[in-house]
Length: 523
Image 1 (cartoon, helix red, strand yellow):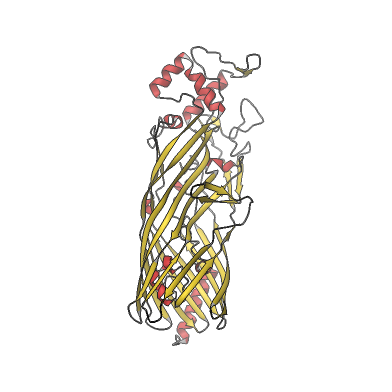
Image 2 (cartoon, rainbow, N blue to C red; image 1 turned 30 degrees about the vertical axis):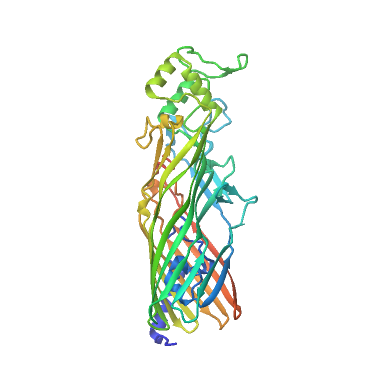
């Protein structure tokens, strides 16, 4: 091996030490392409120019497949632990149309008006329950809390002696994002059960060695896309706040002899048959959508001018989809009773007919679809053997997150919840709901260091730093902020035909969204 000169070696080692000890403030987006293979994760996913690739090169850079000789078979098993915590802190001016959000319910002074923050203006949410979307069965929760295994990932490659072609395939979880929350968790209004999961079940790829220095590759990914969300909903707007104030003014108390609340203005106007307010649950909505086959492709190039330096780059296309599925909106008894009583009065019936207000259905179900897009991605990186015992990889990745400008859910019928919301928002119609996302394109970076202990044992260290594409003003539907990912692992050459290894990873994201700044979260 032609080693670098000592001054350059010392400079490179100093640079990498600074990066690891004082990492710049770079972060992670969503979960895209994180769990492709354990070896890459232990190297901070900085493997686009790696000279010692795994079969996961079908995703990272198919040109790297040329460095896999003869026939190889690979198995990965992940065990993932999830811990999602949130604190909801009300500001001093937390009110809607004069109703104090940190006050207590008029009908029961022991019950906080807003259960998310309680009577003291502070609430906590926690879950450690991962979930997985299974095609044909929907979202499935693990039977226990805490670490849970993902499905096995495996692949194989073939390079016939003397051939310039290497063929390979691998299955992998492209973005495993799924969780469950308890029924009384304050976070139930922001995804009680949720999954945005892309599973690549078949990814054939080929690498071709053009010369001793250059190689190219091409891959195709056939994936299943699942999208599931179930959450409680409420209507924190002034229209519902006015209704609660009127209920207080009319003393809508429960009358035991007649078995319902008193309605002093009947039959002209009924406002007392159901207790509703801006912080009360309207009901629960379940949305289950998927696309069984979503293809993408990637191309890659690898340059290896000598035995201590290599450069690689790859490009992966995006995917445009029309996710289709079903929805169920199950309204609370209080919400249903209020609107049935309101429509049963003279003034209420006229007003509901003019404004298109809800009629008080107990539930609504039907079909739903949404245009959904996977962003395109470009990677470039280098790998350097800076010392006989050390190899360093550096990668930079660009992701076209701006294609997620908004999500629009299209329902096959008018929904009562939407007929109320459309009076106050231009993003809502009777049959559609638009969530503004406004994501921004990002660059994120990874560094991986391999220590060659001897001819059999390698130790790996990695750091990946991803910047979130989500702004504070749209935080909510994609509740993932800036993130750091540390990796540590090893591989051991058991014999001439077998290599085993293990890795551990830690990812962390912490965000603070100021009160009343994101209308996807806390307006």
